[in-house]
Each structure stands twice: as structure tokens, then as C-alpha cells.
Image (cartoon, rainbow, N blue to C red):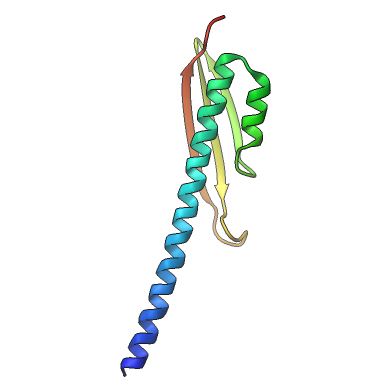
Length: 105
């Protein structure tokens, strides 16, 4: 009886570790999206279009980067339908935004 309980506990623990690693992967993708949004917003506010292109290229694969200029500010939104590890897993929508004041000059 103890062997069966240990087997089920081991399976549960392994499943929990896998789920935890998947969540950590999603959090890392979200942090990357936030970093991309901030970098693109700063470079767009400075008017450095080459740096904007480089920052967008550094975004996670399949991320959509949108840049909005309103008045004296720049807002960047990065959206990603994250499917870490396997394409058959359900997509988790991730979104990050950054807004900065445009630099004059």
C-alpha cells in the first residue's frame, strides 16, 4: 500500500514541477515583452529608428509590437499569444505596455 501511495505522490510532484516550470517560462516571456515595450518606447521617443528596429527584432518570436504617438507621448504595446514548449498547448495571451514622454530636439 505504501508503494502505491509513494508512486502517486511522485507523479503528483513531477506534474507540479512541470507546471511550475511552465508558469516560470510564461513569466519570463512576459518580462521580455515588458523590456521590449520599454526599450521601443524610449528609442521611439528619442527618434532613433535604427534602435527601434533592433529592439523589435529582439522581441520574442511572434510578438506584435504597436507604437502609438499621442500628443507629446509615445505608447508601445507588445502582445504575444504564448505557447511555450509545444504548439498544441493552449495559447496564453500576454500583453505589456510602456509609455514615455517624447524628447524634444
